Image (tube, rainbow, N blue to C red; front, side):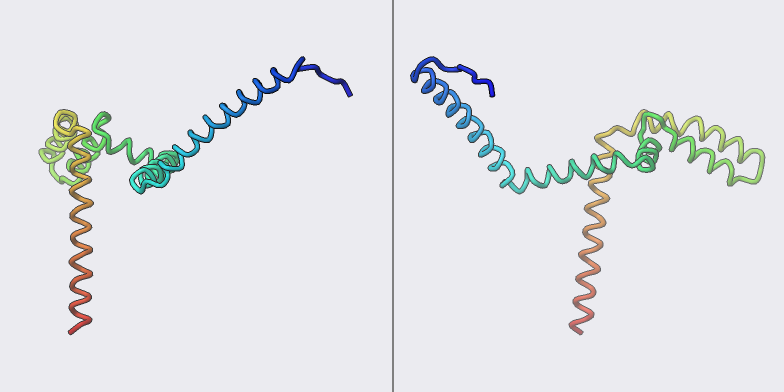
Length: 145
């Protein structure tokens, strides 16, 4: 086995040990910082929700649905217009549907912003939460009677 001569005297060994201790302490500080972040419930919730979002973004079907609902493509407006026009029996109704297919995407593109969409979804979540609370309250009241 070949022998390597890294150190020529004891002072170099002490310097190397000191440098390695400093590196170890720096790694220890970083690990403690990470650990303290993981102890924070808000950070953990954000970490889990971001992980779930990444998983959901990886599902092709959900990506397609999301692309349908994004205001940039305005395909939901086209779909609404086509559905509106297809449900009409008369020629005039179909023409109105074709016009709606042209106008609705422009309206959505102009007025539907990501902030408004986020607020809409936030309000929908809040409403569903309130509905669930009312159902629970009614069930407990009915069970008590």
